[in-house]
Length: 185
Image (cartoon, rainbow, N blue to C red):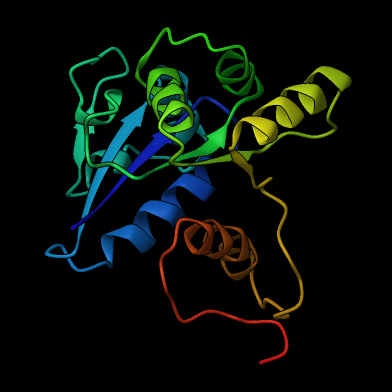
């Protein structure tokens, strides 16, 4: 069984998290175990940007941000991937500096120290030098920085299709095979 943890931090871009969870909910339960942790600001942004509390509707194991007993808070767990989507610049900075003060930053630290897949999806613009240096530091440490920058190759016909180009790319980086637009296909 493939185990994937998803962390939703307090950046704008809750729609990316929703689309990601929607896609993960379509995976066969017997093959995938999905765990989710959200910060308080992530919940606030979701309610503001999506207009509801549908983050509670998913059939995933939800963990509180200070639950250091969550399995993916330990290197001995079988979680092989953590996706932080969206990833605020504050969270990115804490991860880059090794500050493990909540479950999200601790789980990210675990992924880095165990040389497992850590995918960070920052949704910020413009980037300042501190942001860029933190992203460089994390890339050198083994993280994958996948900014929430949609692609247009597939000629998306609506906002959801446009934003899904980012989510599909994140899921591909996580090692999930899916039917999606491929360049040159």
